[in-house]
Amino acid sequence: MTNPSTFVLVHGAFQTGATWEHVAAELRSHGHSVHTPTLAGHGPGAPLNLTHADAVASLVEYLREHDLSDIVLVGHSIAGSFIAKAAEHVPESITRLVFLSALAVADGHALADEFPPEQTAIFGMLDPTQGVLLPFDLIRERACNDMARADAETIFGAMTPVPVAYFTDKLDLRVFYELIGSGRIKTSYINPVNDISFPPGEYGWEKRAQRLGPLCRILQTPGAHYAMTTHPAELAETLIHAGRD
View 1: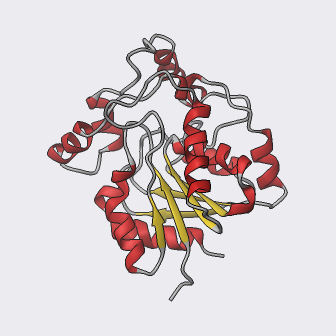
View 2 (view 1 turned 90 degrees about the vertical axis):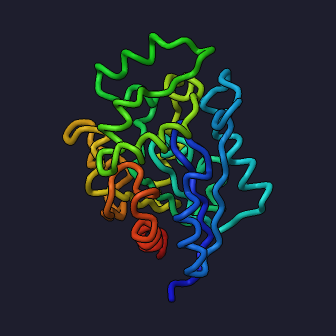
């Protein structure tokens, strides 16, 4: 039996903490404590005039309000940027950051800068008052490529727009990279084997994992971008391996 850990599972764009329901149940069945917050700017009716810093602030507030410590902080997809910035505020509370199919944004970049150029241009043409929600065909073929169309439609049907600024705000990540460079915070990267949300190569997961330092623990797990939906038991087991000392 692995020593119990405190997992904080942070959802990606367009979703809420509910996306972790099945994984959280698996982790709890192994004796772990699990939190699944919904960040500001996500969910039906959420304000769309927020900045990236507002989402980070809501996560930091959640960690402090719940007096959490010795946290395994997991970020899915764009939440890699949220957990990185949150770590700058509460490094003493975190034992490990786990990036699941997540963006490890370069210092000074915006999230949009981490996308292939033909996709980056789209963010500059969006109406901030309407937020951003990627089209179904892109979600279906890139992120839901390992599931039936009906299941992809269910996932997409629960999605809501998020603030455009989450993708366009430039991020100062100097403190974050100092924290992992000095070894004060350890990192893990989980790559679902069928995840093609970003094409292999220059924009693939390997480059993101490399940014997290030479001692970043790298693991693979079954599934694609939404492995928490298609393979919750396997993902929970991988998260346990990713989070432990």
